[in-house]
Length: 376
Image (cartoon, rainbow, N blue to C red):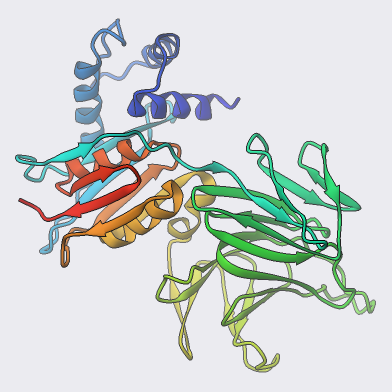
């Protein structure tokens, strides 16, 4: 395993309370091997965790810039912080708002989502895909990424992830698709010669499209089209993200690399909206609006993070609902809190709620029902 990922994994386990004594020692040995003059780590990691936590938070706070706004902004971060040797590890930093009287009733531990999906074949059979695998490959047959057999390919297929699920797919042309939770993608076992087309029925997916030459010998590239319920996105070879959840106000298409044309279905090739890298199209009703954005905010889920940039509590909790498969009850009528930062999706729900709780948000969690309470 990549050393950086290993240390991030150990730090995440420590935050979740799932780290073993042997792993604590491994993490402590690594950290002590790279001393920081501003942060002395006690020799016994497991014996003095509260001291370590306080010193870690104090060290990180020196590295963070807290924005000063007229409206209160809450910084809730469980981020990869670069140390003196640029080795990433996970820690949170919370703005110093009033923490007195904060209440959090947690009676169970809700674990994060993982690799879960179902594959529906052309004959109607439904296959529960292995949670030990990350994805499947469509070729002459259907296999896992390691080459092990799944099923024979049919003429049309569906890949669906539940709440708390994610999965990867390699299409017949070599294009890759990452499916976020609660997502349904339809695709053919083989593409037509003149056009490659898939349908994002619902949810969110990240596409890495493999360029293919046009079949007519013109020297052009074979179009790749992603259809949603309200738009078509045509690409020639690019990386982009589409969020088409039904409970979102707009369908968003975020371009990371290359170029795409966004259009309403049936409007023909003469009326597209062209996106360039770092741009996002928001389709709301009959309007397509384009804006410049930080693409990481909209693609971090693929790399294992929640990413919040001035997100209100409703936006934050909506993402938690999908990943942890929970329901939410709001006993608030609104909130001015805005959250900024990254939290690993590998963290338990309780660990994430503790970050928000420390920023002053109040919750109760009973089973899989989360209640958002008013501030005291």
